[in-house]
Length: 327
Image (cartoon, rainbow, N blue to C red; front, side, top):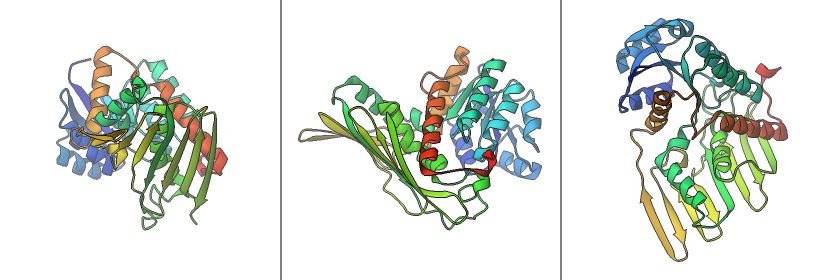
C-alpha cells in the first residue's frame, strides 16, 4: 500500500475524538473518512477534524476506495460484526477493546483477518505506552528478580450516567469489566502470563450490569490482585513487586506518563510522556505493521487478544456476568 495510511473512523463518540486528535500528531496517516448512522453527525465530526469524506453508514465507508484502515470505536456489542464487515471489504482494522464480548467473537474476527489477508489489531493502547513498554522490558530483564505480587485497579463513579448508555445498559454489554476491568487483567497478563487459577466476585446494578468486580489471579509463585468498578473512584495506581525491588506505575496507570523503581533504600523516578494522549503510539504500531505487510502486531498479537478474552470469559463465569446479546 502507499506510504500514507488513509484512516476511517466508525463510531464518533468521545474516544473517536481523542483518536482523531492523536492521528494529527502521527506521520504517515490522515483522516480520510468518518462514518456514523447519522450523516449529519458524520459531517459535524468530519468538519471538526478535517476528514476528507463523510459517510451516513458504516457499510458505505467500508466499501469506499478512499479508505485503507478502519478504527472501530462503537459500543462493544457491535465490534465483531463491524470488524468482520470491514475486513470482508479488504480494509485493515484497529478495533477498540474489548475485541468482542466473548471468545467466539474474537475467533470470528481473527478468521476474517486470515481469510482476507488484512491487518487486525485490538486497540489495547496501554501496551504501546512508552512507560509500560519500559516497565515490561525492566521486569523481563530479571534485574528486580521474579514478580511475587501485582496490584492494579481502575474505577470511577458512573452511576450518574444514562442507564441506556454503554456503561449501564446490559444490551450494550455494559458494566465495569469489559470497559475498564480489562486494563488490570491486561497488566497481569502482560507481566505474568496466564494464571493457573482465577477467583472473582462481582456486585450488580438494578439494570442488570456488573458495577464492581474483584479478582485474584493465582500463579505458581505470585498473585495478582485486580479490581474494577463504576460505583466509586480508585487511585488507579499499579504496583509490581519483585524479589529485589518494586515498580510503581504512576496514576492513571493505563495512560501513565512515568513510573518509579524502588530498590533497597533508593527510589528512582522516570518521566516518559506520551505523544498527545497516547493513542498515537498504537497508531504508529499499525503504520509500522502495514509498512511491513504484517497482518498482526508482534507487540499485541492475535493470540494475545485470544488469551485476554479467555481470561475475561473466565472472570465472567466465576462472577456470574451475562449479556442478553449472548442468549
